[in-house]
Length: 229
Image 1 (cartoon, rainbow, N blue to C red):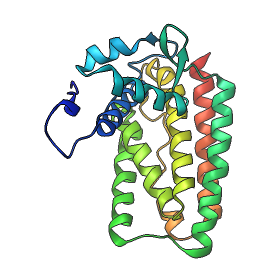
Image 2 (cartoon, rainbow, N blue to C red; image 1 turned 30 degrees about the vertical axis):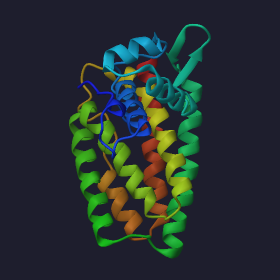
Image 3 (cartoon, one colour; image 1 turned 60 degrees about the horizontal axis):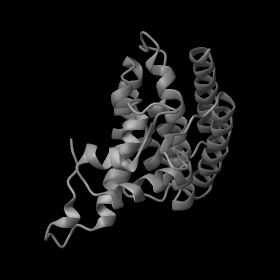
C-alpha cells in the first residue's frame, strides 16, 4: 500500500512527523519481511517515488532507521540495509537474555505493573505468536512476536528497558529472517513457548522464565548458525 504525503493536505491531525513514522514503520516491515535484503542500496528519491511522497519525510525516516541500526548511510549514494554477522547475532541474543532476566527478576520481586486488559492482551499475543511459530508462518510470526515481547516486558513498568529490548529484537529478526526464508519448511522448527513463558512470568517464577528464555536463545542460535552455513 502506498503512503500519501498527507503533510500537503489540510488535515490538522496529520503532521510531517506522522508521515515520517509511517514511512519508518513501512520500511522496517519491509526489512523484517526480508523484502529489503541485507546489503541492498537505495536512494531517498527511489523511496519517495515508491511511496508517492516528498523527499523530506523519507530522508528523516531513513535517518531514524539508521539510528536503530537497520540502515547504513552511504556517502553520495543513499542508504544500505545493514548486514549483521553471526557474531553480531550472538551478541544480540546475549544482550536480550540479560535484559529479559532483569525484567523477570523485577516482576518476580514486585509483581507485574499491569491492568487486566494488559494481561489479556499479552495472552492473546502469546497465543497468536505460538500458533504462527508452530506452523512456521514467518509473515505472521514476526509481528506478533515483537508485540508479544514488547507487551510482556512492559509488565515490568520500565519503558526504557522495554524499548531497548524491542530494538534488540527488531535487529535480531532483521538478521535471521533472510536465513529462515531459505529453509524449505519451518514447521516445528521455531521456538513456540510463548504461552508457557507468560504463565511463568505471571506466577512470578523468574527461574522458570529465565530457563525458558535460555532454551529459546540456544534454539535460535543453533538454527541461525545452521541456516547461515
